[in-house]
Length: 80
Image (cartoon, rainbow, N blue to C red):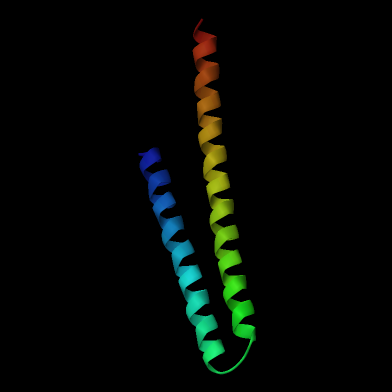
């Protein structure tokens, strides 16, 4: 059950990251269409934010997986 929740979170992170990136690109294009050069900054900022957002969550999930594997290894060593 716990692994299913982690896998669901993984999918949710991909969806949220994609929506953040898509929203930033669409918003930036709308600003560019009005003749403002800040649209490029908006697009770049949104894409960087999406990368950082997803990276932090994947880092946390990776720490969870490493902690779980370490605990399993310690349990195996304790049984010897």
